[in-house]
Length: 235
Image 1 (spheres, one colour):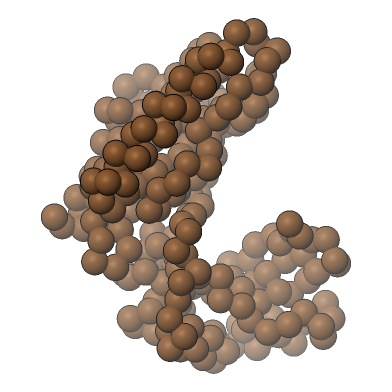
Image 2 (cartoon, rainbow, N blue to C red):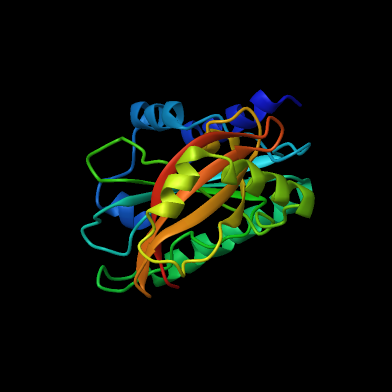
Protein backbone atom coordinates (compact mmCIF):
# COMPACT_ATOMS: atom_id res chain seq x y z
CA UNK A 1 0.00 0.00 0.00
CA UNK A 2 1.34 3.44 -0.94
CA UNK A 3 1.50 6.40 1.40
CA UNK A 4 -1.02 8.23 -0.82
CA UNK A 5 -3.51 5.50 0.09
CA UNK A 6 -3.38 6.68 3.72
CA UNK A 7 -4.57 10.15 2.70
CA UNK A 8 -7.26 8.70 0.43
CA UNK A 9 -8.56 6.48 3.23
CA UNK A 10 -8.81 9.47 5.57
CA UNK A 11 -10.74 11.53 3.02
CA UNK A 12 -13.10 8.64 2.27
CA UNK A 13 -13.86 8.37 5.98
CA UNK A 14 -15.22 11.93 5.79
CA UNK A 15 -17.08 11.71 2.48
CA UNK A 16 -18.57 8.24 2.86
CA UNK A 17 -18.69 7.10 6.49
CA UNK A 18 -18.63 10.25 8.63
CA UNK A 19 -20.30 9.74 12.02
CA UNK A 20 -22.21 12.84 13.12
CA UNK A 21 -23.06 13.24 16.80
CA UNK A 22 -26.86 13.12 17.37
CA UNK A 23 -26.82 16.48 19.16
CA UNK A 24 -25.49 18.08 15.96
CA UNK A 25 -28.07 16.26 13.84
CA UNK A 26 -30.83 17.51 16.14
CA UNK A 27 -29.61 21.08 15.57
CA UNK A 28 -29.67 20.65 11.79
CA UNK A 29 -25.87 20.78 11.60
CA UNK A 30 -25.26 17.49 9.81
CA UNK A 31 -23.17 18.27 6.70
CA UNK A 32 -24.59 17.32 3.31
CA UNK A 33 -22.63 15.63 0.53
CA UNK A 34 -21.20 18.89 -0.80
CA UNK A 35 -20.07 19.99 2.65
CA UNK A 36 -18.47 16.61 3.36
CA UNK A 37 -16.56 16.80 0.10
CA UNK A 38 -15.37 20.28 1.05
CA UNK A 39 -14.14 19.06 4.44
CA UNK A 40 -12.34 16.14 2.82
CA UNK A 41 -10.59 18.42 0.32
CA UNK A 42 -9.34 20.64 3.15
CA UNK A 43 -7.84 17.67 5.00
CA UNK A 44 -4.05 17.63 4.56
CA UNK A 45 -2.38 14.52 3.17
CA UNK A 46 -2.19 12.31 6.25
CA UNK A 47 0.59 9.74 6.23
CA UNK A 48 1.20 6.95 8.73
CA UNK A 49 4.33 7.08 10.85
CA UNK A 50 7.52 5.36 9.67
CA UNK A 51 6.84 2.13 7.72
CA UNK A 52 3.25 1.81 8.93
CA UNK A 53 0.11 2.10 6.81
CA UNK A 54 -3.46 2.81 7.81
CA UNK A 55 -5.67 -0.26 7.95
CA UNK A 56 -8.74 1.81 8.82
CA UNK A 57 -9.77 5.40 9.46
CA UNK A 58 -12.86 6.55 11.34
CA UNK A 59 -14.08 10.15 11.19
CA UNK A 60 -16.61 11.78 13.48
CA UNK A 61 -18.09 15.26 13.66
CA UNK A 62 -18.51 15.77 17.38
CA UNK A 63 -20.42 18.23 19.51
CA UNK A 64 -19.06 20.70 22.09
CA UNK A 65 -21.55 20.05 24.93
CA UNK A 66 -23.32 23.37 24.26
CA UNK A 67 -26.85 23.96 23.00
CA UNK A 68 -26.78 25.68 20.65
CA UNK A 69 -23.32 24.48 19.70
CA UNK A 70 -20.60 27.10 19.48
CA UNK A 71 -18.23 24.85 17.57
CA UNK A 72 -17.97 21.37 16.06
CA UNK A 73 -15.04 19.00 16.47
CA UNK A 74 -13.76 16.86 13.60
CA UNK A 75 -11.94 13.81 14.95
CA UNK A 76 -9.91 11.46 12.75
CA UNK A 77 -8.90 8.09 14.21
CA UNK A 78 -6.42 5.94 12.23
CA UNK A 79 -5.20 2.41 13.00
CA UNK A 80 -2.16 0.42 11.90
CA UNK A 81 -3.51 -3.13 12.25
CA UNK A 82 -6.71 -5.11 11.76
CA UNK A 83 -6.79 -5.88 15.48
CA UNK A 84 -6.69 -2.16 16.32
CA UNK A 85 -9.34 -1.50 13.68
CA UNK A 86 -11.69 -4.05 15.25
CA UNK A 87 -11.14 -2.56 18.70
CA UNK A 88 -11.79 0.94 17.33
CA UNK A 89 -15.04 -0.21 15.71
CA UNK A 90 -16.19 -1.80 18.96
CA UNK A 91 -15.45 1.39 20.89
CA UNK A 92 -17.39 3.49 18.36
CA UNK A 93 -20.36 1.14 18.67
CA UNK A 94 -20.17 1.21 22.48
CA UNK A 95 -19.99 5.01 22.53
CA UNK A 96 -22.93 5.29 20.10
CA UNK A 97 -25.07 3.07 22.36
CA UNK A 98 -24.13 5.12 25.41
CA UNK A 99 -25.04 8.37 23.63
CA UNK A 100 -28.37 6.95 22.44
CA UNK A 101 -29.23 5.75 25.96
CA UNK A 102 -28.50 9.13 27.57
CA UNK A 103 -29.96 11.31 24.80
CA UNK A 104 -33.43 11.72 26.31
CA UNK A 105 -33.85 15.45 26.97
CA UNK A 106 -31.84 18.39 25.57
CA UNK A 107 -30.93 19.56 29.08
CA UNK A 108 -29.23 16.20 29.78
CA UNK A 109 -25.55 16.06 28.91
CA UNK A 110 -24.43 13.10 26.80
CA UNK A 111 -20.98 11.67 25.97
CA UNK A 112 -18.98 12.63 22.93
CA UNK A 113 -16.53 10.60 20.80
CA UNK A 114 -13.37 11.97 22.40
CA UNK A 115 -10.53 10.03 24.04
CA UNK A 116 -10.86 6.90 21.93
CA UNK A 117 -7.54 5.12 21.48
CA UNK A 118 -6.03 4.87 18.00
CA UNK A 119 -2.59 4.66 16.42
CA UNK A 120 -2.95 8.26 15.29
CA UNK A 121 -5.57 10.84 16.23
CA UNK A 122 -6.17 14.19 14.54
CA UNK A 123 -8.55 16.89 15.75
CA UNK A 124 -9.78 20.07 14.10
CA UNK A 125 -12.42 22.69 14.95
CA UNK A 126 -15.02 24.38 12.77
CA UNK A 127 -17.81 26.74 13.66
CA UNK A 128 -21.49 26.10 12.85
CA UNK A 129 -22.40 27.81 9.61
CA UNK A 130 -18.82 27.60 8.36
CA UNK A 131 -17.19 24.74 6.49
CA UNK A 132 -13.64 25.91 7.12
CA UNK A 133 -11.39 23.59 9.12
CA UNK A 134 -8.88 25.03 11.56
CA UNK A 135 -5.40 23.53 11.64
CA UNK A 136 -5.25 19.93 12.77
CA UNK A 137 -3.79 18.86 16.10
CA UNK A 138 -2.04 15.50 16.37
CA UNK A 139 -2.17 13.05 19.29
CA UNK A 140 -0.68 9.61 19.88
CA UNK A 141 0.46 7.58 22.87
CA UNK A 142 3.82 6.89 21.19
CA UNK A 143 4.46 10.48 20.14
CA UNK A 144 7.09 11.11 22.82
CA UNK A 145 9.07 7.96 21.96
CA UNK A 146 12.00 9.64 20.19
CA UNK A 147 15.41 7.94 20.09
CA UNK A 148 18.07 9.79 22.06
CA UNK A 149 20.26 10.20 18.97
CA UNK A 150 17.41 11.85 17.03
CA UNK A 151 16.51 13.96 20.04
CA UNK A 152 20.07 15.26 20.33
CA UNK A 153 20.25 15.95 16.59
CA UNK A 154 16.99 17.92 16.66
CA UNK A 155 18.13 20.06 19.60
CA UNK A 156 21.45 20.73 17.85
CA UNK A 157 19.64 21.88 14.71
CA UNK A 158 17.31 24.14 16.69
CA UNK A 159 20.13 25.70 18.71
CA UNK A 160 21.82 26.61 15.43
CA UNK A 161 18.89 28.74 14.24
CA UNK A 162 19.30 32.56 14.43
CA UNK A 163 15.63 32.77 15.43
CA UNK A 164 16.34 30.48 18.38
CA UNK A 165 19.12 32.81 19.55
CA UNK A 166 16.80 35.81 19.26
CA UNK A 167 14.07 34.12 21.27
CA UNK A 168 16.62 33.02 23.86
CA UNK A 169 17.86 36.62 24.28
CA UNK A 170 14.35 38.09 24.41
CA UNK A 171 12.79 35.74 26.96
CA UNK A 172 10.77 37.35 29.74
CA UNK A 173 13.19 36.05 32.39
CA UNK A 174 16.21 33.75 32.72
CA UNK A 175 14.60 30.80 34.48
CA UNK A 176 12.47 29.31 31.73
CA UNK A 177 14.68 26.28 31.11
CA UNK A 178 16.25 24.78 27.98
CA UNK A 179 14.44 23.81 24.76
CA UNK A 180 12.25 20.73 25.17
CA UNK A 181 11.46 17.97 22.66
CA UNK A 182 7.68 17.55 22.56
CA UNK A 183 7.74 14.53 20.24
CA UNK A 184 6.96 13.48 16.70
CA UNK A 185 4.97 15.72 14.36
CA UNK A 186 3.36 14.51 11.10
CA UNK A 187 4.60 15.90 7.77
CA UNK A 188 1.38 17.84 7.14
CA UNK A 189 1.82 19.85 10.35
CA UNK A 190 5.59 20.23 10.06
CA UNK A 191 5.38 21.33 6.39
CA UNK A 192 8.01 18.67 5.77
CA UNK A 193 8.56 15.72 3.44
CA UNK A 194 9.11 13.41 6.39
CA UNK A 195 7.91 13.03 9.96
CA UNK A 196 9.51 15.74 12.07
CA UNK A 197 10.52 16.31 15.68
CA UNK A 198 8.76 19.15 17.49
CA UNK A 199 10.83 21.29 19.86
CA UNK A 200 9.54 24.06 22.16
CA UNK A 201 11.44 26.95 23.70
CA UNK A 202 9.46 28.66 26.44
CA UNK A 203 9.75 32.43 25.96
CA UNK A 204 7.13 33.69 28.43
CA UNK A 205 5.53 32.12 31.51
CA UNK A 206 3.85 33.62 34.57
CA UNK A 207 3.31 30.40 36.48
CA UNK A 208 -0.04 29.68 34.83
CA UNK A 209 0.24 30.52 31.15
CA UNK A 210 2.75 31.72 28.63
CA UNK A 211 4.10 31.36 25.11
CA UNK A 212 6.56 29.03 23.39
CA UNK A 213 8.59 29.27 20.19
CA UNK A 214 7.95 26.03 18.25
CA UNK A 215 10.45 24.46 15.84
CA UNK A 216 9.73 21.51 13.52
CA UNK A 217 12.87 19.57 12.51
CA UNK A 218 12.68 17.15 9.57
CA UNK A 219 14.39 14.06 10.99
CA UNK A 220 15.98 13.07 7.64
CA UNK A 221 17.09 16.40 6.16
CA UNK A 222 17.93 17.78 9.65
CA UNK A 223 16.39 21.12 8.71
CA UNK A 224 13.83 23.30 10.44
CA UNK A 225 10.82 23.20 8.13
CA UNK A 226 8.43 25.30 10.18
CA UNK A 227 8.45 27.77 13.08
CA UNK A 228 5.59 29.37 14.96
CA UNK A 229 4.52 30.49 18.42
CA UNK A 230 1.94 28.75 20.58
CA UNK A 231 0.21 29.45 23.85
CA UNK A 232 1.15 27.39 26.90
CA UNK A 233 -1.18 26.67 29.81
CA UNK A 234 -0.31 24.84 33.02
CA UNK A 235 -2.20 21.56 33.24
